[in-house]
Image (spheres, one colour):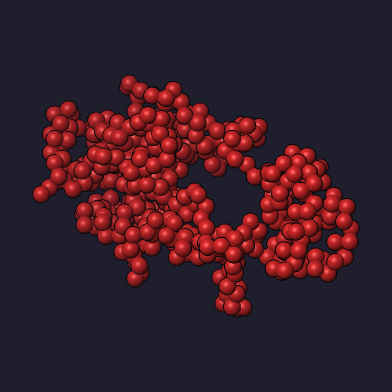
Length: 408
């Protein structure tokens, strides 16, 4: 990329927005990656040892496959924020930024001299996105909080798994990614408000609150009816049939007959018309009662066991009953729809040749986002950022970098 900065290559509706990221692990980097996917110029400030996300997930040799994706479309600069020189550089970069994304425990940025009051005094238009376990206020604010912990506090873990077993977890960072989308949405809403007021503000995103928002139908039901729902396994609470059903080839097919029309089509396919007049199954509400859900799932499972997965899936699709095999990642790689929608993108990589990464979401018809480059190595753009963003000459750069010894 000699002679061309990464900012010059930016495309997408957020091109021209400058973002500084001071984050680690998942929710913060995922938020900044989303902004970068749509063209924002993202500078990631990392400690000399790098973001811990670089040690997570699978590696090929010393190459982190996770970092290649979650750090894509970003520039990396290594700064020791415990040193005066490192803090000075950070202040200079933030002074030129539209958005700062950070996910440290509340109070850490203030102790570093990077609290919003200090930063906005110099850059009044700054939008500071703060992602933490429990938010910037309240009695739990100082607690450390990872996504899994906050799922427990937010009520999600209680709802995950089978009713006769301990609460389970999804083996993915679902709450971190949900929080990252809320954070990116908040950043854009605050930038919109800035276009009217001229002033920036703080966007406070709590992981436990992002998790809690998934309980939207449960909140009013508890207050009015005292309902404390239990885990439903693979079912959708109060909705049946909507579950995974076994097949003759030891696979699983998910069937979702949520409406009356779809229910009638499924019954016709099963050739069991008596189900339509059974009072347990006549209405959506009736089918959603716990005992009736168990009965209907047993009936459907007994039926699905008579077919191999591909045959059953084809029959259900022909009958216009929403369904799918339960995909593995291998199934996804072989699926023509994922390929057609460019959800498996081959991105050049300087060591591996390329890595395949999840595509950009959402899709825009006129100003789409894109993947401009893979996640960089730790500090790969340190010199270029100091030279191009701050306008420093080589002597000043060497002085600053050499002064980043940790303070006593």
